[in-house]
Image 1 (spheres, one colour):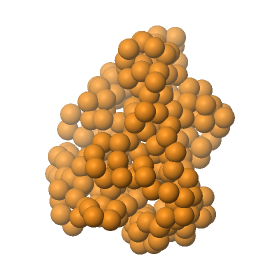
Image 2 (cartoon, rainbow, N blue to C red; image 1 turned 135 degrees about the vertical axis):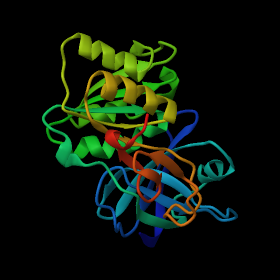
Image 3 (cartoon, rainbow, N blue to C red; image 1 turned 60 degrees about the horizontal axis):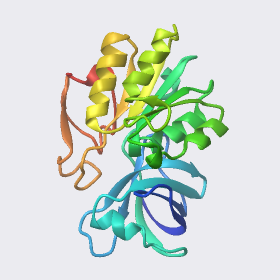
Image 4 (spheres, rainbow, N blue to C red; image 1 turned 30 degrees about the vertical axis):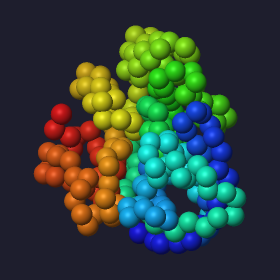
Length: 249
């Protein structure tokens, strides 16, 4: 974990409730896609943990959804403002296990950490992105520009496959497609459905990134612990990425 001061260089709306922010500063401690940062906001006791969407040697890109007072205040941060940020938090996805046919499955604001994963993987993965509606879609073209095949599913059928990410996976499997490893991030209900469909039914091992509420964000308070086959693990410290074999579902 590293602490640094970052400068806001971009903060713009992507959808009615989703924003993209770029932060400029010395990027330290980040070794794998899937890790997260923790942002201190004036007037708030707890920092805001947000996954890393993309990064370079001197900048970090995040995508956040407005869910409460803290993230609402983030939308008003202007170009040039400074933020106290903890970087290099949590573990990340293991690219060495991807194989030659990796699959990425993301839902909503679980999509951002998969973007850096997709950008770094070679060969490029198949990517399934799930949204409630076409109005909430973001970063579809960005995945495509990096050579990924993208399948979109929307719950209301307004774009792509009508249904959920598991419906899109079923369609791929029905065409005889196979995959060597999968990476996923999203709300727990989606993770459980992906676990049942992709791991238990199709027999494909993978890695799952969790979106638990956090207190400290670096393993001291135990507030984000979940049960695994090896006992309780802290999502902020031992996660947010866990392997399918670790889960007792």
